[in-house]
Structures are given as C-alpha cells and as structure tokens.
Length: 271
Image 1 (cartoon, rainbow, N blue to C red):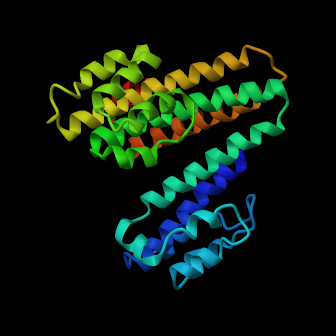
Image 2 (cartoon, one colour; image 1 turned 90 degrees about the vertical axis):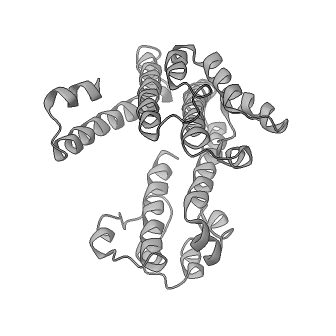
C-alpha cells in the first residue's frame, strides 16, 4: 500500500500530462520524461495513457487495476469542463480506503500502531482541506463533504454538522481547537469570522503556518514511535516519514536557492 501511494502520484502525473496535451493543447514532450514508466505495483502502461487519443482510451489503460473503478466514472466531457480536481480526490479516497482495509492483514499490535498513525494523518489532511477549500476557496458544504477523507476524529465530528446541514467555518474552527488545542493561537490570528475579507496573501501565510504546526505535530508522533517498541510496523512507517520529511527539506532549500532567497530567510522558513 505504501508503494501504491507512490504509484498513485505517478498515475496522477500521467493523467495531468494527457490533460495538458489533449484538453489544454500544451506541449508535453519535455515533461513526459519525468514520469516513471516502470511497473510500481500494478501493470500500467503510462506511455499508452499519456498518448491516448481519447479519454476512453486512457480509461482502458487502467483495466485490471484498482484505479479503473475511479476513472470509468468520468467522461471526456466532465473532465474537460471540471478539470482533474474531483478525479484526483477520488483516487485519494480510494487509496485511503484500501489502506485501512489492509490493516486487517496485520497483527493486532501492528494494526493498532498503523491505524493510530494514519488516523492522525487523515485528521491533518481534513484540517488542511477545511482551511484550503472551506476558507481559501470558499467551497460549499456539499463540496466539502465530498473532499473529506471519511476516517478520523475530525471527520467524525464534522460529519455531525454535515448531516445537519450546518457546517460553518466557526463550528469547524471549534472542532479543530478541541482536537488540536495547540493550534488555537494560529486559528485566532487567522481571524476567519471577524474579517471574512482577509486578503489572499494573509490567508496563504497563515495557512502555511498552520501546515508547519501540523507537520511538527506529525513529526512528534513519529519520533515518539521510534522511542517505543522497535518490533512493530510503526518503526518502518516512522523511518519512511522522517526520510520523506528530510527529502522535502532538501527540495525546499533547492527551491529557495533557485528563487535567490538569502540564508537567513531560508533558515527562518525551515524552522
């Protein structure tokens, strides 16, 4: 399942290239070289997907894989008019569903560790969805209901409001503050309710600060696992996460150097 997450990202990139070439009419030859064409988990012909003449041809290339059920729900017309956001969201949901189902194959201890890790991961993703789409892009509650990954405490509490048709920014803020009280200060500074006309620039800044807080929270979770029982799947998951965090830091530094940030600003942002 961890490899399928990498495969999912590769698949999304392949579909984005097809979309750029077939719908947006952009040249893609210089970008297609960055797609991993080898088999990761499922036997997918990425070259066939990228070069598909029609959407139906692209969907056929996913036959025999878990992704076919998602892509076959869409048509060329819906993709052209709506873009790729909804289809990529469904692919994310598919992966989490298969991930949580895979926990049943683990030992009891490993299942408890893996489930606790990914429930926090899902909480964090759902919180970011509230901020990015509920606040930054002002999605309606019906749209938000489709975006939320249906696991974790945040979703459980939000679903009560969604079922009542009362999902509002204020209630979502209270839920986040209840589950993650350390984030309350950042949420207050975002001042979501009192100043709904907050600038996009300010919102982006506070969103980034919130992402940093959530990343630190996740980092502490994994570091704590490493100080516990070493003979569980948590040790492997923590190692993979920390290596990914290290890779992201290196990419962040390279990006900052590319845009000519000075050393002081780079250190401040990394911290």
